[in-house]
Length: 116
Ligand SMILES: [Zn+2]
Image (tube, rainbow, N blue to C red; front, side, top):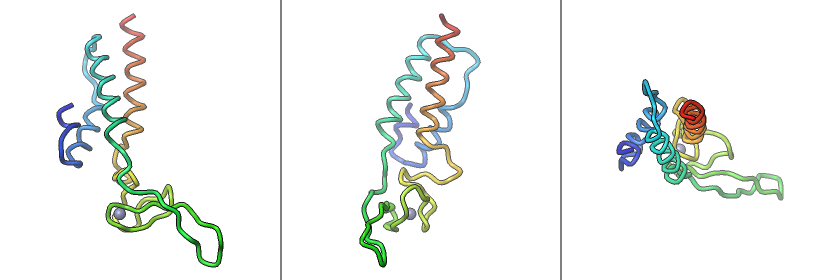
């Protein structure tokens, strides 16, 4: 949790990776900790870029775009053309918060089954 709460975003990313590591055994306290970790990730890893609408050439329609922290404007759902990060500030090969949350949820469910 202390790595996840680090002020340096790159350290926080390392914390996300560590959050997926397994322990050799689990108890109810671990389930509580995993739950806390999950809520923290959901509420703290927000979009860093900004969504916007952009007029298209030769068309009256606007399309949705996002503006990266590095100020480059990109198509929605695409990685930044300039710095290769997504709207959350993650590169393609990095573990994303939503995937980690998914993983933690599955783990909580499994441990619940075993501790019943
Ligand atoms: Zn960028």
